[in-house]
Image 1 (cartoon, one colour):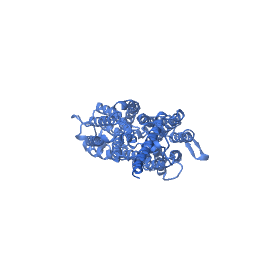
Image 2 (tube, rainbow, N blue to C red):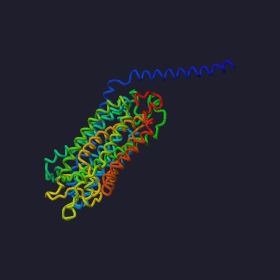
Image 3 (tube, rainbow, N blue to C red):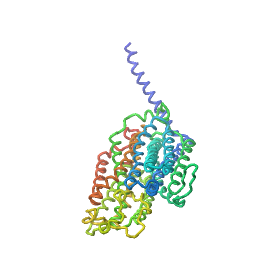
Image 4 (cartoon, rainbow, N blue to C red):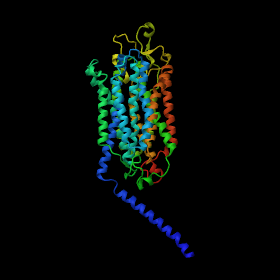
Length: 533
């Protein structure tokens, strides 16, 4: 009996060793055959469909942004510039609400469902926008609803990024995230270009009375966006497939599609997410979007105050600058894919925040020369003035048709802003240098935030987490203009940009604090080695 009892532990130990060997053999087989060629092609076709979805989401925001104000004035004369601010913000509000919902949905159901539903909502919202002229009253509220629904549909950004994160290995992740952000940036750039092309139709355009449709320079862009959305839905049904690979590129069953996972994925999913790192990246992403929203919002009033530009000049010159920054961003997205392999995402994120900090530090007023004062405002109260809401709208939302037709438009820093009398002007060289630096730092921080975030989450379902990250960015785009409208108008650029510098410094301190925690899930649990730091 004693001998038999002594043999039992040995037998159990032998069985455990045999099971471990079998598991190792299965894993080695998985490494030897990472995935079939057909699976690889299907996976990347689906990822390209996600790129297209991201592009169309950005186009949906920017394709009408330059024509919203004149169209609003045409359909509802009771609407003022303050209401325009709500219409512009409604997109971000809708996206902020929808992102966590679509993300949660994608965690438990096939991603095709939230992708198709969200795109269909955007298509319907664009069609509603084309018909906001039909009601006899309250037209501005119909426009507000349409833009909010377009933003709600854009909440699929969380689904797109969570899918790409789950369908790429660690080595593919940075490149895929950079491509996603590049498609988003190109969408923002080409949206106004499409709008400009449709201006050739004219304000009157063509009317189909039987269906109450007016095809003009205001409605053609949204109908074009609806057509692109329909094409996107068809491609999602025809080409998109659920795919998932682990951090080493081995094929796995999709968490939100199959009830059971493969043995490889079960083992890789063991362990908990570092929620401190998750919260930190959400905070950093909020700061990144917040400072960029401040930057794009302040451009028009800053250049009008400092350089005595008319609104027409401010729209034109800043439009050129924005286009140049967009091109610069696309180039940066492509460069960081290669650079991250040598230095690592954390170091690049750190460098991007430093560049943004330098960009805003350069904007601080120096010297003794004061800006030209807009005395004409006191001498002639009949001259039309831009309201604070108009002055603090992003410059790409202003239209030259809003500008006064005469040449008596006041220029310079308004005397009603008391800081104009004692704050030195910001030289044009400072402004251009700041634009270049912020245009360099922002895309770097944007891509690295998404990439680090997806790697920290690892094999866990990422839909809801990506939803919160997108929501934090949307919240930043809402709060940024509100912040700068109060600080800049009442205290001036010195206080506004000093506070922004302080916010960026705080984000750098947070990054330093959690630097060692911003590592991939597989690296954290010793399943992979970190290639660079």
